[in-house]
Length: 478
Image (cartoon, rainbow, N blue to C red; front, side):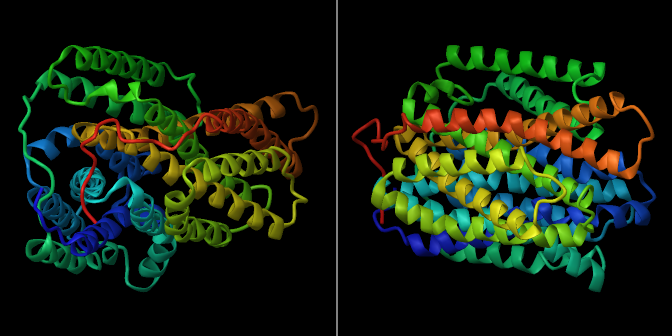
């Protein structure tokens, strides 16, 4: 590592690039209905603009550990931002749906590789004593961007049209590349480990299948009763099992799963998975309930959830500073207690629940997530030796889309099946009130499952300790 690192310039470079790359994860969500009309496609087809984006990100994140060791920080950042710019340009000029989808998938390549590159560099630049604050600052970007995505998208689409969702991103992407060209320095070492093709194939099939299978189960509303969905998930799980076995036998694994032998890392990742499942699922289930039994429009439902989402991002730097000062336990344990209380509230909501109380509880949910997720992830990575940084960050980032897809599919499946069970057992006419009662019944059952997850998170939090780097060769820097 270079003796003098301009960490501020590097972080500014990272945050500019990450903001607009991560923003695209949710920027298109509110425009999907219009795109269906523009290109004459149906909902299952247009949904690939969202599902496909998540799928490509999931596939590429395990490979990021290899690429980080093959290329310099400058090469990786400028390269992935150039790929992202190319995808954005193709999408902005799309003449048909396949062209738009291709641009979207190329965008996902850039986004999927960018986050692991940035997190690995942060671990190398900053000492463990200040990583909480830095990770929190970076968390502000990656949480704030998706939170404002739907709102910003609605404004842009209404005023300028859907193409401007991509056109407005192009100049910022160009600026990020030029800024990085001038100021971004290299950190870490290029070791060029052996490339194992079978590992890449197994991980790609496994991750893609898991994300696609669980996403399909959730979106179709069929749960796991579809033979096609079950087959995809089983084949994917077998691929991942073979991948893990192969990694344990290789001297230079694509993704070193031995990171899980470090207890703080393993516990932190489990907490991270639970929180991601709860967050992704709540962002799907709650808008459904607001627009269903409570009768709010899509825009109003989005605005009601916006304060909590924004606060989640804004609190990330605060939680990072508190993590540096007090360690993980004083944040994660109270966070899991609040999370459990919120989930219990959701398992008892009804159509008579005041909307102001709904907003306050959602804010508390987002606060609890910010108190758990960043401290758990940072503490987990702090325990790893330096040579495992790329693998630890790659695994953590790979689990995000997988956990999100799993959470959405399980919650939606439980909710849907419980609702159908309620209707099947109902005698008499199925009125609007009966449908609303069935929806409420389904939501209650979904959050009973979530309550079990929250209790598990609280139990794990009791064993969390402040991590100490596993080797004496700790990160240097500011």
